[in-house]
Structures are given as C-alpha cells and as structure tokens.
Image 1 (cartoon, rainbow, N blue to C red):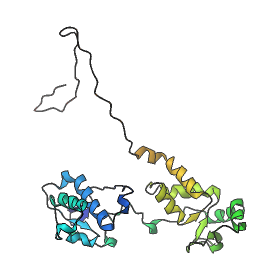
Image 2 (image 1 turned 90 degrees about the vertical axis):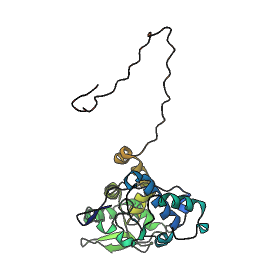
Image 3 (image 1 turned 90 degrees about the horizontal axis):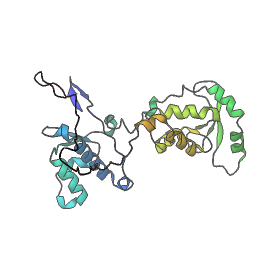
Image 4 (image 1 turned 60 degrees about the vertical axis):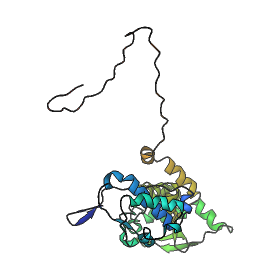
Length: 262
C-alpha cells in the first residue's frame, strides 16, 4: 500500500495457495512465509525503497532481534532474504487488517438472503420427497424443526443439529443459492462448500457443489494452466552458400527521434 492524499491505498494484491506440508506449519512460520513470498514477488517495487512490513503475528516483530541459533534453517533463509530489503516489521491488529484478507475472506455480514423467495421455498419444502425421506429416516443425524422466516411470516424447515439453523433447500432453489455465493469471489470447491453448507443443507451437497464449481466458465477462464515448452527448431545444413535464407521479422517498433525501423 502507499499513502496518497493522507489515505492508504492498495498498490497490488497477492494470493498464494499453500501446499499440504506448508498448511501444517505453525502460524509463525506461515506468516513468515507470507512476508518472504510477498517481498520476493514485489522485489522490483521494493528495491531501494524504505517500507514497513505489517503483520498480525506479533512475535514476528522480534524476528530480527532473536538469536540466530534459535531459528530453523528455513526460518533463517527467509529472514536473511527479507533483511536485504527491510527489517522494519510492525504489528497490526487482525481486525484492522481488512485489506490483507480481501482475497481470502468474504464479509459474511454483507451476504443477504433477499435473493430468495421464502414463501415459494416454504411451499416447495412441503412437496419435497427428499425432505420427507430425511424426516422419516431414524438413522439420519439431521434434526429438522420449523423456524420463522427472517423476512416473511412463513415458517421454514431447517436442520438444527449444528447449533445454528441450516435451511433445507428443495431442488429448484439449489442452483440459485450456489450461484449467489460462488459468484461473490469464485472460490474453490472446499471454500464454496463451506460457505454454503454453513447456511443450507440438501442431499449430496458436496458432490453437487464440486460439479458446479468444476464446470464454472468464469473459473475455467481465469484458471492458470501449465503449458509445455516447445523445443528449439532445427534446420538442415545447406548444400551451398546462400542456398537458404532465414529472415527474422519484428515490428512495428516505436519511433525514436522521428525514425522508425520495421
């Protein structure tokens, strides 16, 4: 971020998915890795400048003051690289660190249920065969109760086994709910499922959400694909001088002092 007219404004964002082994690291190591990756990625913007590193992991404030013998080899490599650019690490409270979480967290309070027609959904629940089979299944862990609608006078059938009511969604409303939550930031399968499953429930939800996420056109267009590099071409040796001519075509090039070459 940079200070512009007394307001801090973001310059660039970076989001990286941790590997399975990195996910098992301690919070300290993961926060240190985040700083290391960020400095490495934005090196061209940070080199030769004075800048401050903000983190909500308070122990990192003293990372450059501790005895090097207490660091693991990986921590020492990360700290050594970061120290080439800045050692000014300051603490910021997590509640005030909203910009850093912009790519990974969705503001739950901003999610509204106004996109649903609760009266139509309530009628569909009464006619839903899957809901009736769930209610009659003694082996099911779901506990269904009638809960007042948040925006109308109707009552809705919700699962209360998790402590917070989860609305049972008939078939015709499932795609609408998925698109509403998934299109907020196009998260992956796990994040989309967690976002929806905390509020709603229906049979085979995990498989349904997985199929819809994997077939999302917007996600496919923005997905990073790995391409194999084509090897350098080879040319047969000519039989005589100037029997073959190779030409490199470049341009058009920008003009310089009123002259251009193509």
